[in-house]
Image (cartoon, rainbow, N blue to C red; front, side, top):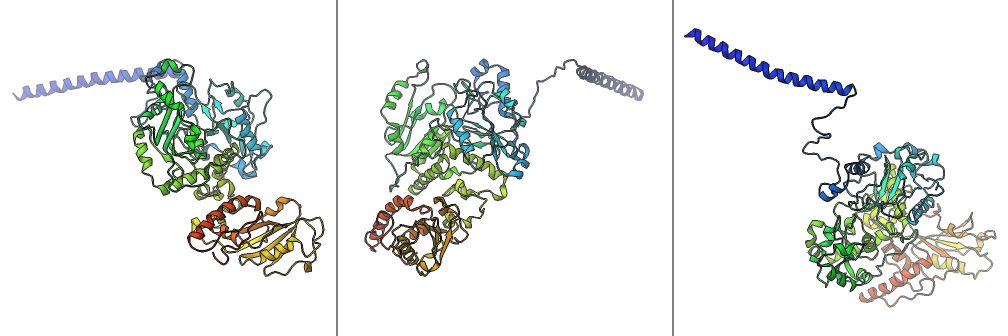
Length: 632
């Protein structure tokens, strides 16, 4: 019996060994075959993988455009090669940052200098791109010597990369690669307003940008490279090169609610990307205080795609004037179009109509430095039906603050091509020289980042604009600078009377006479005796602008700039304005007059309501009545 058990145990063990050998042998042969295929691949034969590369874990996704998986029609019409080329051009250099794709040594030698390539004969350049180049070449950053440059800008027009556009530049890829300073795009800045084309409008600019930075409109947060690219606004070809119109806000009404609460007037896309949001606007349009108008009449084939609502929408669209709506609306809807950006954005800013952003995934212009929560309402396309109730719930004080900030941002950064370009360059310069860069307050408060040079100081306390933000009391004294161009031949000359009048002010710290006359300086005894020091400086250049130079003798924040023939009996009123509204009184005599005249009207009514004084008298040049004397 025991022997039978031993035989059965041996038989079972043998069977197990046979099975193990059989299974192991199969795996061993498979491994040998796999190794043999590897060997063939190494010897030049084609290797056929079991699964196509790349393979991504479940938590990661391949680098494909977000629209690609949603449009079966698009997938069936566009070749895989086209998709691959488009995606590679968009995502190449995706990981570029200033630390990895920018050479700081070029900037440390000569500072922040920008070089624009010379234009080649026969190159087609649009008016908008010419304005950009002119703005750079007219700036303090420009250099004509490439060896001195820190940043390079192409003379090739890269603004419109839509292949269906007449402004599209062909063969740009080879032209860029042939530039002798290209260096794979390192330290280069590329400006772009339109990219991609129908039907998907990808962010493909049509050539390999390498390690270049993009200053791009309608850029998505997905493709935006933080602290490397710069998001710029979409602007039209009619946008002024320099100067530009001021904002349309002339006065703030209390309460701040206008005729319309929320408005929009624009195209409705019947098919394709960007159509979803605009096609749904009719759900919240009430024809009273929420007026959202769309039209199907655009493009050549719109009638082929018209739906049952087109006729009604087109008729309603024609009833309203866009400008009238814009200037009489509290909020302006800014939905995405074919691309993320829209002309409606800058139009709303200028009109002091608070933008309501409805473009998911859009990296807002200059978002690196501008706090858009202070000037706009950031909505969500998926919550369109909640937009009316959301804007109605915003307090009137908040609406006033938003409206005022739209005007500041428009005039500081967006009113001209020059300001858009200079803001872009200043942002890049701040990245390079972080130790003397502007902070958020400098960018988002008056007078703005373009007028506050960190090279002067990076300390907020050194700028009088920020005293109120810092809780610092403004100094109570000013320096009078009098520009003299007439010889002193009589004791009855206006300049001597002006000296006596200014010196009587209790706020006057000192008087500086800038002698720009061709005659020699008068003797000391010719000047009247005053209670404050009078310093006479002989101008070197003898030009009008020399009165605005920061002379070492000026030790006060407030400077009263006067001509020698100014008739002035007191300066208290202007200094009172400067101490209480320092953001508004930093101007010359003629510039200030309009503002002070309006301010005087308001100030008179204010004082009357307090039961204090009567009207303020003014002559054609300056202030005549003593107002606020002895008060801070």
